[in-house]
Amino acid sequence: MSRLSVNTRLLRRIVVDFVREEIRKTGLKKGVLGLSGGIDSALVAFIAAEALGPENVHAVCMPYKSSNPDSEAHARVVAEACGVNFTVIPITPMVDAYFDRFPDADNMRRGNKMARERMTILFDHSALHGALVLGTSNKTELLLGYGTLYGDMASALNPIGDLYKSQIWQLSGEMGVPREVIEKKPSADLWAGQTDEQELGFTYREVDELMYCMVDLRMTTEELLAEGFAAEFIATVGEKIKNSHFKRRLPIIAKVSNRTIDRDFRYSRDWGK
Amino acid sequence: MDFTIALAQIKPKLGCLTDNLSLVEGAIERGIRERADLIVFPELALTGYFLKDLVPDLALGLDSPEIARLKELSRHIGIAVGFVEATGDYRFFNSALFLDGGEIRHLHRKVYLPTYGLFDEQRYLARGDRFRAFDSRFGRMGMLICEDFWHLSAPYILAMDGATTLLCLSSSPGRGLSEDESLGSTVAWQRLTATTATFLNSRVIYCNRVGFEDGVNFWGGSEAVSPSGVATSRGKLLEEDFVLATIREGELRRERIFSPLMRDENLPLTLRELARIDTEGGR
Image 1 (tube, rainbow over the protein chains, first blue to last red):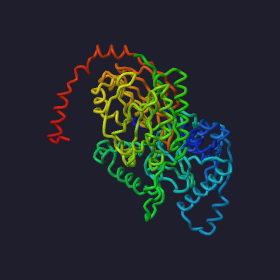
Image 2: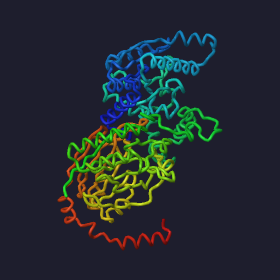
Image 3: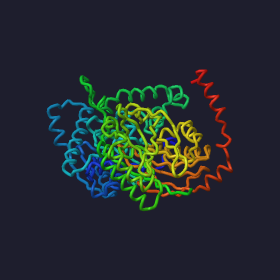
Image 4: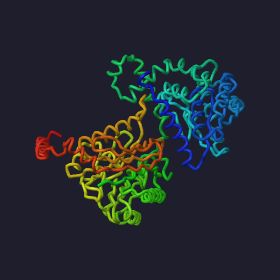
């Protein structure tokens, strides 16, 4: 854990300032986010409440009929604890209406559809409230590709995307996220009994340590082996990072002109802000 | 002489020349009001940092009305400010001007353009080709821009050229979070400014910006470091600030007596050895 330990007071300051400044420079003052009942979105709700004032944060809980009822209860506890606006919008009617046409669809298709359904609701609420959508994906899942492209990965800005799950736990403690939310097993909650670590096949603490050495410190495979990571684990995680890279990039464009967006037409997003 | 430096730890808006010029003018007026003799701004104070393809659009010629306005203001206070400079042959430099008494006293073009990690300067900017000290009414000075300061030879050359005050205009992104109280970039810079001041028996005046650009924070922490390597004034971390630092001639005099490293520095030996390394193709 030690390598991933961070000064949470300094981290808190940076991510809170980030949300405040990056939203205000667009001329807006509000944020909207999906509150699942899990730790990542709970932390973002706390960050946004501190940055913007809880009255300027809209948290939307969007359960599906198979979601664990505890999730909505936890989301409610979080919203009450940090004082943000809270709305529940069940997605069962929309999702089921679609899958009536595809009754044989597997869990992956259903889970992705749910994530994207939630995304459309958040972006609609962005227009409804004049608020930017806050991302809730952490660095661990972004690197592993453990998220739905244009679903839960979609946002206008993400205060926690450079934090490994182990650091999410630390900062959540610092910011006062309710204990029961910090301590429960992480789950995408797409189907009953699902847990992230079971599905991934390793624990967050293990993979965070590995990815910190691999990505942040750029250790070679030999160095990683010497650190005590198993060869198979190194290979599996390396493949996951590589194979999910498309999710972390904009769609690629067939280049024909001299100035192609993002290749030789390059501007910061904060251009003019 | 003793004099007062204002460190304008501002938050420029990316790509907004007019807004930033107002910001800079406001700080200059405050500096004049508060009786500072010299005001130092961050690197690229007039433009913001992650400019990318905006570079040519925001570049100013030395004869532009914006520079003329700053020259005019320098009748009341010395000004060191960073901007993108356009030359007649359409090269664009990450430059810093030292203005005083209504005139340009010195121009430095950033030599070491970082192009690694989160930096991409050499893609967009032309590289400066000299380090020169210059005389000012505050004594002989040298001016460097951010990454220049990390190359030992740059402050060394300026100090050997007689500079006793080294100005460093910076836009340093905050990064490297650990269990420490400060970010890795803060710790590294503070170590660097203190060490450079000590080794060269020179004052180091460091001005860094604050604010965010595309999620990257700039950590501030502008400081005046005495020739003994002690930060005598320091700006806040991660927020705007306006620091007034009193520079005492006595500190420089005492340090140069106490630890005469610059007096004893052997220039011919250094030149001989560098020439040998160059000849032998060791680099």
